[in-house]
Length: 155
Image 1 (cartoon, helix red, strand yellow):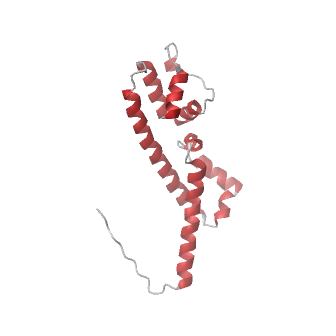
Image 2: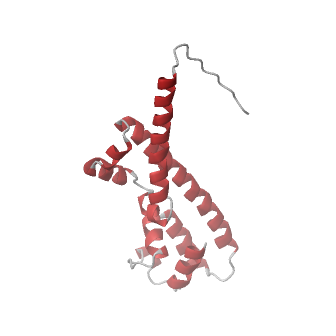
């Protein structure tokens, strides 16, 4: 369903409209900075708690370069991270389908792959081939961890 809203302003001048366009450009610049920096694998580790990045921006005064009020850039920040989360969720669903249909994995390897998909910090480490301890629930099982990590990286 589409809905059209028309807003009218009786005292809109060219200077006021120019200010609005400038604010919109700055808002878009914040979102673009987030997508550029955290829209790829680098952002995967921040999906659980994106406020870690936001807190860093506040501490280093990085957000001041956009020239927006705090509530404005924080809204753009939250909106951008929500879009990134949605994209990762969609990708996770596609990966789940392909893993489910993959006949080369054992039941334990599928379980391990699904576990990694639900733990973004571990998935990031697996995809970037960083070392991490195997969760206790997988101790004693025969897993080809490298095979699972490679498949997840390609998917």
